Length: 173
Image 1: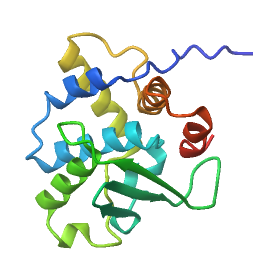
Image 2: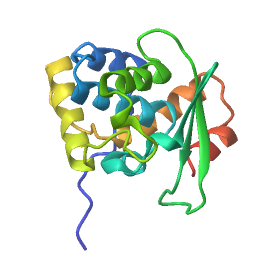
Image 3: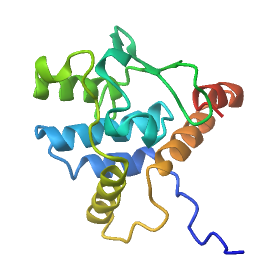
């Protein structure tokens, strides 16, 4: 049979996310949406299919004083809705701040309950990751994809002492 010749996804780090953010103008809707997608994937361990192409709606997002909670309506491993959350970090890598920024740019009409948080297609999102990585690091994005967000988020959580069982539950593994 044919061998799978794809490179394994290279895990993102907080440093990589910071460099990518530096290449974006978060006052522009498309770039603010892309940034929110990056942080959704990294901090909530979401697959791109769980938030791209309108899979995640604003009704699924709840802001609270300590962070943000998201209902993942479906995943490739579960048809039962799952709730995942991220604490408010403060600073440039805060998921809650990224989502609130996107909502402020779009306005209430574009952020009503049934509207998508990320309307980019899976293909467009992955292309944007590769393009932004290439700009940020002046290097070819070999092994870089939306899966790099999940891998990196899980690796970062493990390095910070989050129990493996919690990471597995949050990532729906």
